[in-house]
Image (cartoon, rainbow, N blue to C red):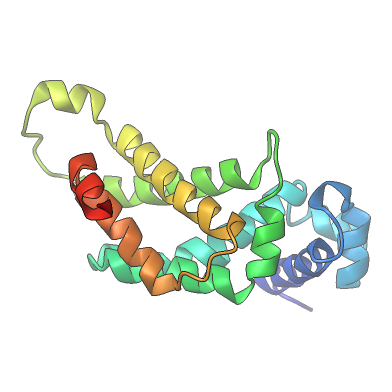
Length: 192
């Protein structure tokens, strides 16, 4: 008998294969379970719907591998891991990125990133005394910071996936790092 994680992977692989042949909107749960060689109720024991399955794929294949690097302060290496993992199955992620609407790839990705970053920030600040500018802290809450960084990283991921760019994962990490550490003035000057 397979473990939950083995079945999750089997369903994910079936979903990814189907996405290469048809739009996500047209993929049914039956299509996914047929591809995985299981019955429909098996799917619902693991995922609520295909969008939750997509969230699982994004979280486990793209985002979770970067967290040990983030925790070690190796942000550039973490971002490189994201783009390296995206590039391994770029066709799938490119097609998935075209999913729009309430359960868009962009919104699922942003929420996954936000959740991971928020958890990390809360863990890092647990037990520390609050100091600093109270006015800044009133707006710059951990949730707002996680949301800001999630938006910016999702923007970069979406652009990279949807432009036929040959920019390497390490170059994308350098670009993201530059964006996050420089002012708009610095960027304008760098483009001249």
